[in-house]
Image (cartoon, rainbow, N blue to C red; front, top):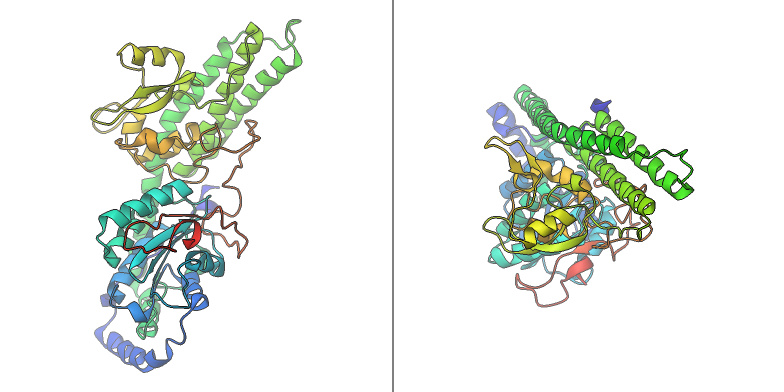
Amino acid sequence: MCDGRERFARRAAAPWSLPLAVLAALVLMGAALAPAAHSATGVDTVAAALRNGPVFVDPRVAGQMSPAQATALADRITGADKPVFVAVLPAAPEFPAATALQDLRSAVGITGVYAIHLGSRFNAGADPQVMPRSAVVNLVGQVQRSSGGDTVTEVNSFVDQALRQAGGHAPNTWRNDPAGSGSIGSGTTALIVLVGLAALVAAGGLVLSRRRRKARAARERAQLDRLRTVIDEDITAFGEELDRLDFRPADPVADDPMRGDYARALDLYERAKSLMTSACRPDDVQPVTEALEDGRFALATLDARRAGRPLPERRPPCFFDPRHGPSVRDVAWAPPGGTPREVPACAADAVRIEDGGTPLSRTVDTPSGPEPYWNAGPVYGPYAGGYLGGGLLPGLLIGTLLGGSLYGPGYGDGYGYGGYDGYDGYDDGGPGNGPDGGDSSGSGFDPGDFGGGSGGGGGSDGGFDGGGFG
């Protein structure tokens, strides 16, 4: 069952795997075809190129990014199997700064992350199910402030981080571009396509591609195994809570709301077990911890009903150990060497923090020994994302190893931190509903949800701002 869910991740074979004579012939063919390789450039031309590959460089700004640099960038994107699109364009009338990003997203028609270097300025946008607006804004601002305005530095810095944070998969249309390099947008396009086609039939390229796919699959299996150990412990702990509950639905003092809470907790326990059994990739564990978090809130609600207390407010679980159940308030806390921030805590951990003590944190095994889950690396992103998938995470994780790895689908949902209405503990939806990253959506997207970065920095002179350049 897992095999059917594996995504392709192909990269072009090195041209030197071909005989020199073949390459020489291809060079001559490319030179002959070069005059016809490029006609008028506009949004539709750029969009057509990006549907076949992740990078497009307009020939009028070829000096800002060379064909070799563009091909290397495209190679990284296709190798990461993420829907990240990059266009390097001139400040020209056919690319109005106020609408260029929105127009390009609409013309390409594929859900993803879109980065544009327009003239001397840089910006990006993303569909919310791929990367939330807050993540795009923060990342674009960081890139603009730290790159010094250099095109290659800005684009590569953004892409390197977006590949780690973006959700979804590379679009299937990229399968039509054997080199995985999209369009360099100049007379070299025909040459690159021909070299890529020839490289695909080279045995060395095929072997390399297979090895990389196997290596990636092995890496994901190892990551999933690490997560499975931790989450199986969490599922067991929740099952023990149910066993200790001492609640009998047939008891005369039990009413329908109590029975409903109890049934919901049982259903979510079974759902967590089933989801974990069928998990194939590390990202598959996020719905598991979501179910466990929902189940613990159902138990907290049942406990309040039985005790005659007011029903609890829907809050995120305790940051230090989600197995402690829903938090009761926020407390000021800082990781070692970090800056203080407000984090949700259970009653016991809140008292420990306020008394100057150490909270009881959820630790996991790492090569250097047990560490709190937030300091054990990005492999625990899906684990934390299911428990704490609200808009509070960027502030919580500054200065930790888990850092920015939770900017994925569903990030920013619910719990009053960025939230959406109507959460009932069962809905797997939210603002990230719709086509998955890399899937076709046509022009059917909400420009208001297509999160973009700030126009500040990077030489911006206005009109090149968030949510689609204005």
